[in-house]
Image (cartoon, rainbow, N blue to C red; front, side, top):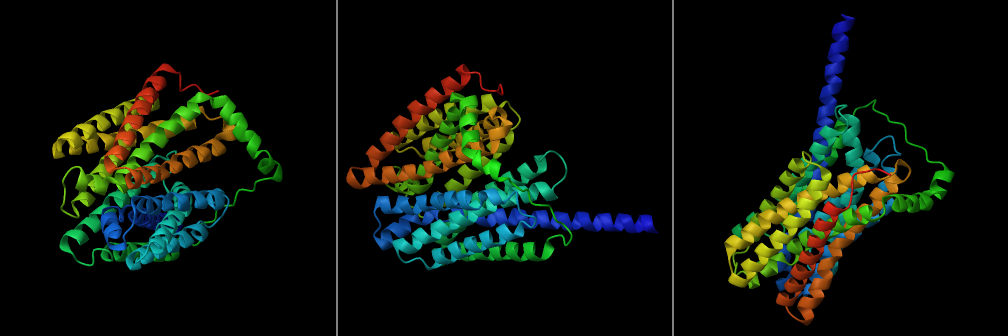
Length: 413
């Protein structure tokens, strides 16, 4: 009888853990929905509120600001608390509040705060959710946790523009409905985490000594010295990839309307969804090849995507634009996986955490590149902004691809 009870108890714990994993994944989906859903709506906001291109890109960049604030303020706490709900539930409340502000947005300030809260929620949630996935997932070295996180991110990012695109095309509360759906998703995830969390699951927080805190700067300097140019190649590649992606998401609707003659509102949401799905698939597939090959190929295909976009704009070719978007999606995933994997490989253990933190800080700064492009649009033209993005981006990505092939990357110092 005791053996039967033991098996039943084990089965019950497995079911509870699986349910918890599902709600953790749903929490990530809610956060990423709130990140991508506004993209097709930017032209409507700009038209109705009389926003300049700079104002629009500042609203977009506020999300990155929120993520960075969260990473700096609570990011290091995720590995030190026993009950990760203390981080995840407030983060979900921030996601909910951001979506609520979006549904009521009637000014630049309201949109800015909505994006800032969305970033704060995503930044605070990501670290805690990833650690929770490791704690509750199977003991397979984190492979299942990484796959769940990737699928959650891809699902959230892709469905956000679809929600907005459908709302715009049907003209059914187009600036409200997407965010009501996000609030519902966040509320379900919040309730699920509150009720489904294993009652006796307690991981002891990791205690960091004062000497470790004092030596943090020294550890970063040591890590940068050990990795040298290789770290900056990886960070630079991800910066360029995210800068290009941010530009597609922020000023892409204006490019589609004014330079590609796509005047059907809502369609851009579906296009972006396809781009993000391709990026997610690319991340999964890129894990099967060497990190160095993935990074170099990603940089090279970024150049190819720029060539497709240039041809598409000059000839008003939708086929060229779609080809460029698909190639850009692959490039995004390949660069992300290749650069992140290489940074993990080359970083000394003593400075690994600090280098990873700096790596993502550099990458998130790329979300403010569209602000510079917005200034060019306001003071010159959209064509000039796109020409600058394409010419500078193509040159740097080609240089990065060649350098990655030339320099020995994998060896850990």
